[in-house]
Length: 357
Image (cartoon, rainbow, N blue to C red; front, side, top):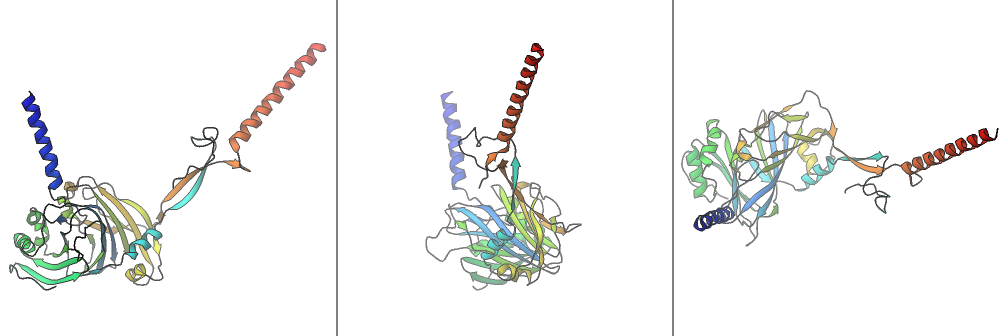
């Protein structure tokens, strides 16, 4: 019995150690894998998509954790793509544009932090050069953009694509050839990104510099299928700039998408105005969770809703109803007690008066 228990404990320990040293790739639009025995995980991917009916632009930014100094991921695109560094201020502008409105909701009876349950009365508010490779892989271009080594590729064979990537320093999952086959069959192209910071010893941690990818497309599509290779739950934040309010065609294996903002924005200047083309545009902000990435079965395709109904989240803050700083419930109870006392006094006096008569 003791031997069996020791064997079981050893197996569990080996499993835990294996999970610590295994590459942890997680990316909302592709597969991110660190170099060697280092670890990396994508806590959140936030992307801005601008679509005018003919051209699509995606500005994406990853928030990562781990100790990796190098990592790589790949993103399929339906057409010939150009890639450049994005402006991080774009996301700050979008956070400001989609900030929820705050309203006060009064309540009558005191709650936990109100007197007499607490001594304080509060409102309870919370506050490069192309590389050589197999002829089945075409190198459209290769550039160095900040800490990114970007290769734009075509491929007619998924195995040849994987071989080219590995021979050119892009370490990606073993399942890549299988998962990328549907894109090869549809003659999509690929943006392969190798994150290799110029500063020696710099870790890939926190918010990475955004990348801006542009390609022609007659439909609004956000590549997600390769996310099924991720080993950890995924969180996607998507800002969509288009002529109308947009919505995902399906859940693609995740939780129900939640719209956190919908409305027309008219930025005057800055990166948001530049991306919008200097004119008013409808902005839809969507959040979606993928607790089990292996269930992702397609790319996100977004369509216009029947109506451009605006929406903004409302955060309600509870506040005790008062008059002149005095709780209304206290005034009401006091008045009721006074009225009761007066009534009792009147009844007693009448009874006494009746007895005398």
